[in-house]
Amino acid sequence: MKNKIFFRSTLIVVVLVIVMISMHFYNFLNISEISFTDSWSEDFKIGETNDDDFKLSSLEDNILNLNIEKPNKFNFNIIDKKGEVKDSGTNEISNFEYKNVNQSYLIKDKYIYLYKNNVYMSTFDGDKFLEPIKIIENVNYLTVRMIDEDIIITTSNDEKVLAYKFQNEELENIFEKENDRNIKSAYYSPEDNLLVSVEDKGKDRELLTLFNERKNENIVLVDINKYTGYSIKDINIDNLEDRLVVTYLKRLNKDGSKNYQINNIRIDKDTLDFESSKYYLDNYDIYELESDIETYVENNEIHIIGSGENSKNQYSSDKNDIFDMTLKKNGEVKNVEFIATTDEYSSQIEMVKFNGYKYVVFNEVVYDSDDLRIFSDSEEMMAKERITREDYLSASLKAVVIPFISIMYTVIRGLMIIFVMALPLGIFYFTYFNKGYSKDSIKIAVMIGIYIIANIIVFKFIYFTQGNEIYYPNFFFSNFYRILGPLAMNMISGLATFIFYKESKKKCMDLSFITYPTFFIIIDVFLNNILYVPFLTIFRLFGF
Picture 1 (tube, rainbow, N blue to C red):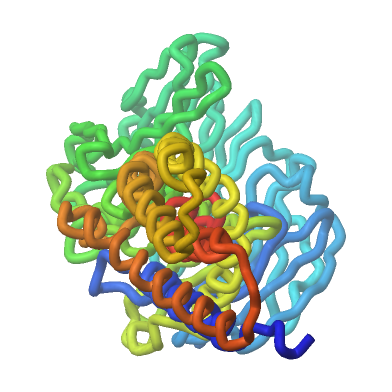
Picture 2 (tube, rainbow, N blue to C red):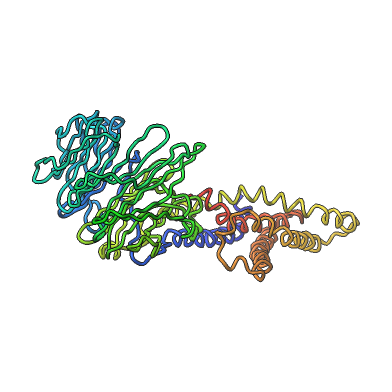
């Protein structure tokens, strides 16, 4: 039995497989390191969530991340300036049921939410969220903003629109007006006495309006015809010197699909004159915008952080990367930069400013769970290693399955080559093999030669017309390589076959001549599949 073991032949095949797997392992690591910016850090996993609802806020010394788990479980992470989880915990609260919470906000250590037409507030005390207290009654819609050091809460019901300032643990009513225009969500700016609101005008119209408290005047900023399928979503409000800037998503819901467009309105606080802009993101290599944006002001410019397809990233086909769009004061796009790449699909974004830096957390949908990942422009996070232990583990797991995938493709693609070889083999059989010639070396050479020619003929069809060649290294596309590449693999397979041939003769084994070309063809097809198939299936099998 021991004499029948082909040790050297097996060893050379194993070594070749390991070399090619190592090449793909290195490629997977490079993919994980792809970056389109030098201004932001790599993103790092900080936890998992089963729901698409998480919040982010800044405390005095840390960042607070809240992940809500149905029906009333609060999972929290305390994150330091390096983006690392210092502490985490879980607790449940009363007067909270996830499915009945319509709007919720995490501002510093306060979690404020609307539950059964009442506004509640739960305070984070360092190791848990305290039992909530009811702070406002009879509310249909709720918005909460942080302006300077004050928490501004704006509510509306069928009768009134009210705004409150929460400061030093006290709630003060600072604005009130009759809701005679069917206002839904509203945003009050106390420093300017301006109210931005969404008005529902029945089945046919939706308005985005500005109310000037000083002049008791309403100005229509946007008029939406609902029959077109459009609606206003995700309103963000910022102060930019003498202007109030409203950035929102215009959603098109038609035939079961949803599309989003970023719109921006700049309002002069003195004259209340305004200018509007809408942005066609495909002009900036962004497609399929996701339903959530964040805005911030830096250097007297508005920045919009969102998630969309990055056409510059060949590994993010049908997936979303995160971008930062910079707008000039006049609303023109100054720059668009992709600041984070995602392995799968990013569905929600939260951003906070902490210690003078920006920290972004997003939800990445991967396989059977959602990963929470964080990145920042802070010096501490920029200094962290870009390739993590998680990246090494992920690349390893993807690389080790390659031989098994290649075995499957060897059967399929080997049959294609045999089909091409059938005619010339038939001709040689009737003109040479059945004439009584007995020199096996010639028969072996003829069969291998026919395979090499057939392989060159079908090589382009098998490996370069599958639609996913974009994942190949650039040198694969040179005409020089398309000829020499298969021949180089033939030489490697020939070396393995020669070792197998010499080993069989040394063991005095009487094998049929057909054994050797069969061994050559199987090894060559198998090694070609190990080399090419991971690139062709990288999107479907490995989730890039």
